Image (cartoon, rainbow, N blue to C red):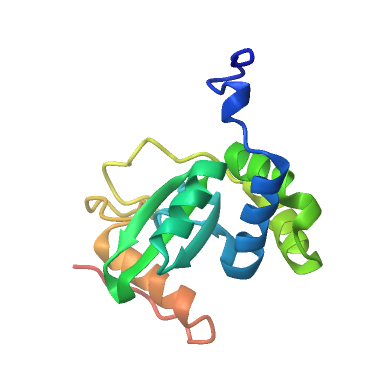
Length: 169
């Protein structure tokens, strides 16, 4: 007899302690905890993400059955990638696996979850013109026209380079 509904799960659907320990072992050996940044604009929200990549599709599918998330087949090197993203879902999976995670994974989880909770939401408004003071050219990327965007990217990559006045026709 199934138990009460808890946010879409029946109690019979919840993983057992042994299944969680198995998933934690796979994650400890093959997994990664990181902040994923889907875009480059300054308003882009970085999200906490767990991934496991391996060739064994059956292992990845079992991990998905236990922890949720989704599986992406990767044509490169015949890899299958399991992913779980979003602060709350990642936090829940980490909490379930916590007793079986090593000290390095625990430390990384603390770092990612601390930053992941504080990231700002995506900026949904796009300016029509460059946000550089005095520039009226059309917006291209990250709030800048093409010329100002290229200059900003150059300065990000080469902070030691001397700053020269940008000439935009």
